[in-house]
Length: 63
Image 1 (cartoon, helix red, strand yellow):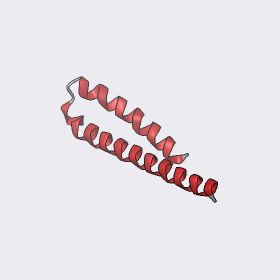
Image 2: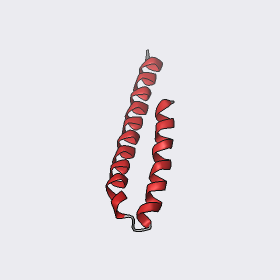
Image 3: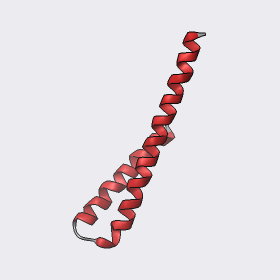
């Protein structure tokens, strides 16, 4: 569940950065881009873990 907490915190930070960038605070654009890529990577990681768990569960059921 630690990943969920981290994802929630990243999403909150992204929302705050989005507000700054929307106000034409261009110095925050690199941070916004970075946090967007971090969120995508974490979501991909969570998807991979979920698929791996599904494979393990299917094998246990088949055995």
